[in-house]
Amino acid sequence: MNVIQEFCSSAKIENLFRIISSLSKISQLDNTLGEEISRAGSQAILKRLVDQIKEYITIYETSTNETSEELMDKLMDYLDLTCELYSPMQSRGMPFTNEEIERRLPLVYKLGPNQGEEEDGKYHDYPTTILISQVTVRQSSQGDVGYVMWPSAIVLSRWLLSNPQHILGKSVLEIGAGCGLVGIAAARIIAQSNGEEKKCVTITDVNDLVIDNIAKNIVLNDVSEVAGVAKLDFYEQTGKNESGKWIEGFTFQDREPVEVILAADIICQPSDATAAAKTIYDALVPTGRAFVVCADSEHRFGIEIFQEECERVGLEITTTNVADMSEDLLSDCHSTSGYVDGMNLTFYDIQKK
Image 1 (cartoon, one colour):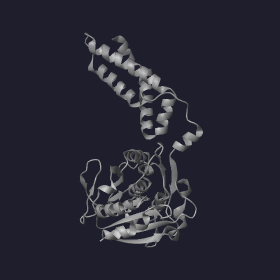
Image 2 (image 1 turned 45 degrees about the vertical axis):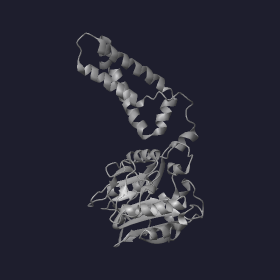
Image 3 (image 1 turned 30 degrees about the horizontal axis):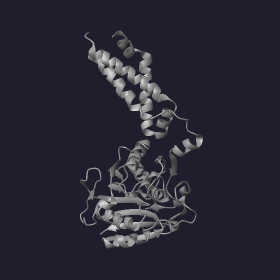
Image 4 (image 1 turned 180 degrees about the horizontal axis):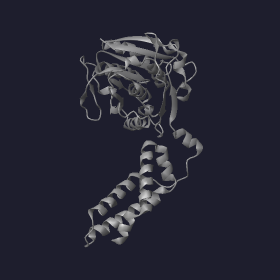
């Protein structure tokens, strides 16, 4: 029993577990670091540590001597902490190459308001830097499009930073969010605002792995107080909720409608256009607005019927070519998937009657 007491009271052991705690927290935010730790051979070390602690717990539980509960609590805390970082499914491998690391590092977007846009003679000033981690798993189906960044998300995020009056003090929902840039930009605006009620931004997608990645990006950008995630499947919405409500995909419970919907590059096929229009109608309060940016039909199959589908469910819609709004909106689009020079993107301003 003395050896257990020495183990738990050792300053070196306490420092070791401080390091393990820090690595565990960082690994939860940075998948690349977690994988790098595993590849470096740490799992073998962690396994020995787990086995050692379990042995000490067995000794404690089978001992006939009187010992303190504090000692057992400390052993259990150490075991829980080690298991957070230990993954028996991970095996040692070659360290990442520089190219692999670069591909896994968060993308950095330095966004800011467009020059020349103003309201009531006052320029908006919400410059912000946003870090976006993409999903590192290889895409294998159309349902995986949210793994990577797409150009419309940058355009809509830049537009929001120049037009924050459309979301300040309002409930906001991002649909088909992918990596979550637009919703996080909205959350950053709300977090930085003064004198406005700070309502939460709900950022949604249908892919569970994508939703997990959005949650990490929310933490990475320190907007957890004003942003959260939920699951929303366009194909579960009816397009018939005049007063507004939408079905949450984890609980299948009705959720309250919102005043503003944001969406970027959400259509890949004609049925998506129909389902997206129904979702926007259902999820908005009466007189609510949606701001959507999508590439044209040359690059997004099905977008050509989106306006018609919105009008079919009772939404009012106006369209503007993004290139006619501001060239600044297209900055950084080359860093996204699927962007090509000369690509036409359309801005949709949609209102529920």
